[in-house]
Image (tube, rainbow, N blue to C red):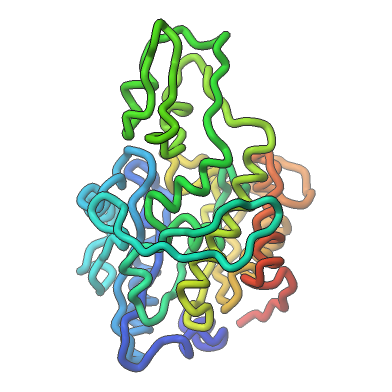
Length: 346
């Protein structure tokens, strides 16, 4: 890790006297394949050795599990092994107690049908002098892969910023399957659902599109619309672009950990069995390039013997029924980074 931190140029983004946000997903309560705290500690120590003042950070979740508020997240983080003592730096939930502490950032460009005009970036991340983004590369139900781009787009924004991306893939009701049990109404954290005359009604002004209703419905009456995942990915790329509009991308570096490559993300409890043998760690200054290299390496990695799968491109995308490259292509067009890369080994 020290070799690639130095050779990749990550050490050059660290200010001699300034704050450095170490962005990481600290795992949902019940997930066991999140990034190990010891790796985060190594990066913290390297940053401090150079002269930076690091803090470990993430934002609250949109869904109501163990990371819905900052208070809940800190308890979950400690449960998963992330404390000031273990990582060697303060742990800061960047978007405040309820997840709304941030600053709106105007998007200067919009393409591929995206109507997103601004994204609210979490305050603590916005105030940092530099940022090192640590991403556990794994599958994701909507974007195919969860890597550096998703860590920027979803992990660095407030609840409003998350909702602004998820709005393009809203839970849709199949009335023929709904038996009006009301479970979805009870589990909605934003009081956006009501049952009227045995029919489900949604208050669009309150809905944050967290899909907690979809995952909780025992009848399977709620589903994501066809084409919604592709639209979500376009907005995901624009959100990442917005974060890099607010924070000079020359002050951000990336580490992708290709290990415990599960079908689903670290929010899932559990996220499934690993699909391929562990590959290693990548470092780069380009989030698009590092994600593309990660996907390519996963596709070439030996499969876990108990899970035979065809050796065809985009393993994670095929498992999650989408094209993982959609958000990477859009991000490239927005100037976030390049799909072209050169792989150097230590």
